[in-house]
Length: 227
Image (cartoon, rainbow, N blue to C red; front, side, top):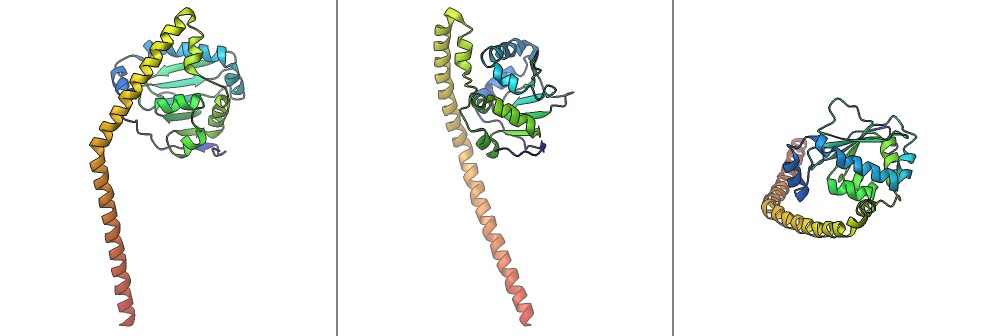
């Protein structure tokens, strides 16, 4: 379970080499305001299908929760006001003082929201990191735990007769995405594998040299004592 301490400072999360990262590069010139209607729609669906999530955050009406998908060129700011919650897309957190910030790759954030990964394991393994008020992070995590969020199914309910063909298109897009992701991982391993193996070999050699020097120092001290 996450610590109950009031403050946690995180280390940065490196964005993975993935199709999302490439999409993020393409989205970099896009003003956040053009993306705002999409996230307004997401919040509307969550309020309609999972009102209990925001109800469980009612104890923190003044909280400002930052969500940072590290492989995209924008961040999200959630203000869970009980009567009028707000989800804003921004370029960064400049000018804000979020109560808590959760950072991680977009795929991990989606998986956490849908309950497909263990939140504690994701935080402890540094796949996701957070900073700020731990109580707020715990409240958000507990609110989405067991909520049964399925983003694809939730949006399908809003599409009426268009749901079936659009969901088929989404399924096809998902398969293409996974194939591209696998290909990019193969490229990453091919490019970085030799360098990583070389770094491991150098690290092992440095450890051997350090051990040899430590043994030499012990030998010299022993001789000095005998002398």
